[in-house]
Length: 516
Ligand SMILES: *Cc1c(COP(=O)(O)O)cnc(C)c1O
Image (cartoon, rainbow, N blue to C red; front, top):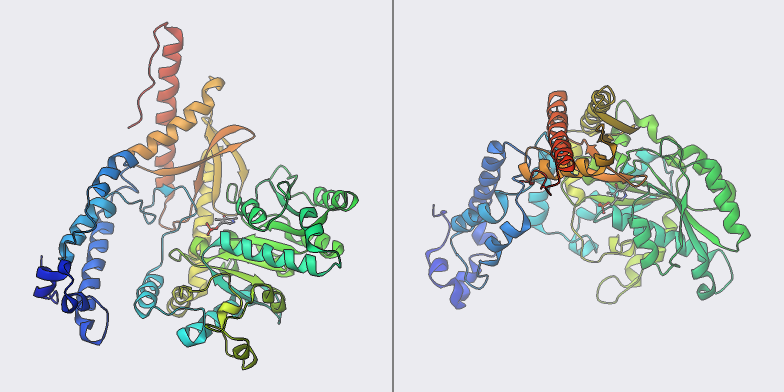
């Protein structure tokens, strides 16, 4: 297929440095038809692929896909967009992992809503950059409204503010930077003296970006202290109180407590009201990492699970996890907008101080990034077209489905289930009579499942043992899908156990069934 609007001269001389041909690729007044046609063709490819996908992935191994990509000569363009799209099928679309598929049950990647895809297309074509007003009129105000809207949903009060970020990792880093600066500002001692004494308290189920942030923030290697959890893997408030007291006695300065509202592994929510009370009493910054649990902010039935979040000093939300937004879309929110000054620098070439005096809204004054995508537009169009209740209803549906999955697994004698999540995660494992094979059987089942492409599930370790995990984020996943995947897991795991026990009773070394 030769796409209309593809200038003949572009095909013949694009590779030889012809300016006219090169210009035909720029998006401007003279090329809007080409833009329309090319994007429509791309949308058509994706729609066609999504329409025919019958499993979440093909299970392709990196070693098989790499040669396809290596063989491409990037210095010799195909020039014909249709040919490039054909090629894209084999290097990307054919083997991509599709989160819209109901048997993708692995990570915190969601299927996306169409209004947000519309936003994505609009924001990249206009290409606003949200650092300064003079690059993003309108975009800046839209982002600010969404920050205010989110802060309102959280209940952070009249002085709240925040900024969109690239993801929960950046949001956590940003929040902890502010916490560090506020802690340092509150004492008269020199920074160099205090820095090694700063501590962050988080539960073992907290996200690893807290550790990464501590390192980036120049804290001591042992700066992140693990607070004990209860049987439901929630931070134990008495343990938190003890740790705060112990740090004080040891001359350490607790710069933040990180409570998690939706742990990545277990989907559990730390007891926010009790944690907030302790933080307030101790004068410690409370950061709530709601990267996963933020979908509850719009849930018609479960908003109460986040009670206490309104007492946080800072909050991380990942719209790209539980608001069905495409990557990336995240924000960090703060109770007191004044703290954002810790990330403020003025550059004469970008955002001179006089602009702040003139109240020109330059978002770069609050952000760790400079050039920054207008990701907020996706959420804006989602709210304007669907509304928050519709998003929350979708999230409620996946939480209901996780409860179904938990019930199926806990009634099934072949499996053992860990904590019941108030969100959409189920951690479990296949438990054979031959207990010593349990770890390997579960590892094997997960790999075999992924290699077949029939379903994708996650894995984790609990108390040193290998477990399997469903993270449900797709409202299209049915109880039947889940039951089907459970049977596939049991099939792979029991086959592994049979092969192994047969091998153990013979002297011949024997391979278990190969993955693939
Ligand atoms: C996913 C996650 C993060 C990190 O967010 P990214 O958007 O992947 O950077 C942080 N905290 C929690 C609890 C998460 O689940």
